[in-house]
Image (spheres, rainbow, N blue to C red):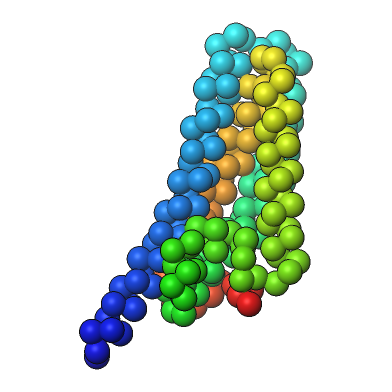
Length: 175
């Protein structure tokens, strides 16, 4: 094996790891940012109606954001795109691995539009939630925290599945 090939293999391995670590840090930093607001809601105390809304909202977020968004769509795609980087990654893809893994570029047009639109929507929702007072902000953030945490766990699950299978868990949709 040539030295050039060894460096390419190492670069692809590093790029795949960078992709997963970068996405994980992005999700983790969002969790860290919303955690204090979720905790504040509990410190202030919740009325019985607020507790009911908290449980309903948390269930909704675990189902929609966690299960449908992360477990069924985002996490397996990120793991597959990281595996693609490991096997066939180009230099620019490796440098930009986290955003590559999230489908912001080198994906079908539909995937790129979905990724960017979802990001814009999340930014708008975050901006709107900043105007809410406690406990409402904390209730919303608690659901978000649960969904993100669930999603992060499933990201790691799909990475492990992908490594064990040595194959894509879903189509990485690379163009």
